Length: 473
Image (cartoon, rainbow, N blue to C red; front, side, top):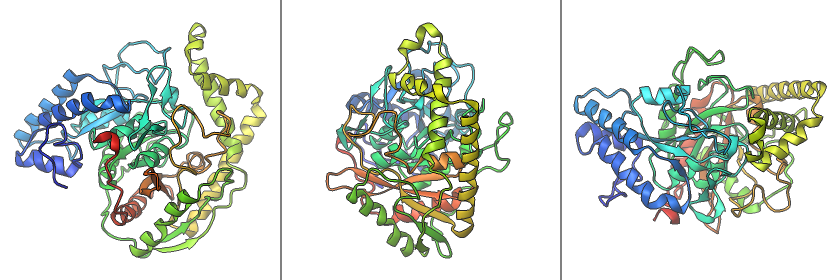
């Protein structure tokens, strides 16, 4: 890709490797890149409301330090000097963390969350923090603190959530990398809506501390405009963390993404074994495009559906309600009226969850995980939809005709949070209205590398995925 020489366009669409080659050759510096992207945020962010907290002096200090390392031929890693945004659910030492809510104070966080620490140790430059719905509890990005994040491909529509700020920032050319999180689809949903890559690592792949009580649902992971950049970021994020009792001892090793898919057994499922109350034939047709693309890379693709022992929505609804109730309980009673109304409504629905019902949900989750394991004894990967519809109009939490606390309409992402398996969204095409659609790839535990190779095969063969959104022009 040729990097334009115009003001804040110069580095807008640069990949990780393009940036680091430029740093190594002396063609430009991390400081120049950071200054350019901060100018881009100032010019364009108001169109979509993606980046919600900036600390330019800290950003530029990190960029100056990286510039000195590159000039001294001593970069810390392949991400040294590379700009990254951080979703406002991850703690950054010295920065406040509001989690999208009004009840949080402005006290600076005492230490980085592990993923942020790994990025800092690698020399990445923190551009700013991106919007999230309060507590990450929506499939759109709208919060009492930040308002709504809009879709760069159609600013009348949602960017998705809960990592919608991260996805929209990438689509707008604000850095090549973003740190997001996923408790029910929060990396994959906005990635699908915004034409970027979102990777939910397997539970334990990316360390976390303190451990989320919503185990194994919630994980932190990379978002990027390309599979290669997401893979490079995952390699850094998965480095060891001694405090996390569930962290894997072996980090992700970036695979050869050009190795092809010969010998891989891939299952395609149009519904991923789930009940689908909402169907869009145009989305279905775009997702099905993945089959010939994967076959063209050498894979053997067959039609096969997971068979779930229980409807995944049943246990998921219990866990989601319990998580919202716990989130509300953590807020001082006098400040609870400030909490997002959706969280309060879902927490109220948790009142009928007794111990027996919760334990049954745990048993159901274990049964789902066992069924997924059995499925992946027969297949290397599973491919299907991320969302049943493209991005819908802004101002709504859910599509028209569905209740705001009801997740039945989008059943394709949260089962894999309950099973703990890795899953990602990669762009596959656009609707006639110009809205992006992603395809979901799911792998067995520990097989992120195989999953990323398949994503790269789709990315390589889908020619329109780099289409720049109107809001970024």
